[in-house]
Length: 241
Image 1 (cartoon, rainbow, N blue to C red):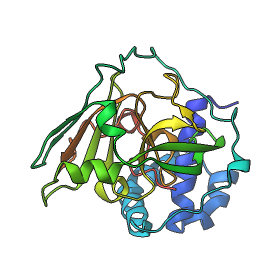
Image 2: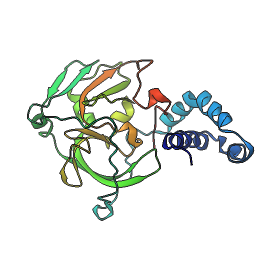
Image 3: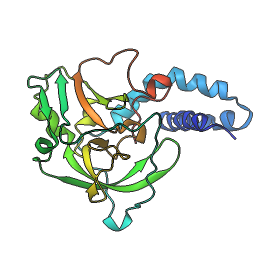
């Protein structure tokens, strides 16, 4: 049996081949082909993969949601790695900075003054499992708008209390169904699920949806050696659905 990490890389490679039209050479990959050949095709084609996915993204198109009756309360698995951070909600601040005209430092009370947005969507993990979850929170686009981003912004970085980091393209961050969530299935978000704030969106794979977010930084360029915790270990950067 392949290790879990091998399965993750295989899923990403196969996903690219399907997206790019190279799935027709599947007999090489599944039959007499080799994992090395598949790796070479995937790595050489990653920039094209990301460009194709970005073109397919409609920044305003809503993803169909599920009825509340479809919620799978126990299906969302909790991935824990080194530790779960301890965060005092009463002193928590979300920092929004970078290429903005109005840097922000927001308490949870500040964030919850904005209208609550709820959505019931499918959370998809790169490991091959999925769960239908109802998330509640504030649209990320509203937080970004409050910070008055500069015209040159193209990417958004997310820093988490446990040291995890991620980056998104600005169009995905501004999608109307990308939330900074503080509720799950109608209840306050638990610390295991990323409280006080986590990303939730139907347009990205699970590893892009950071937990325990403490800082959002808007930038013009990605840092070459720091695009995302898993991406810097070989995962696909765009990771769109």
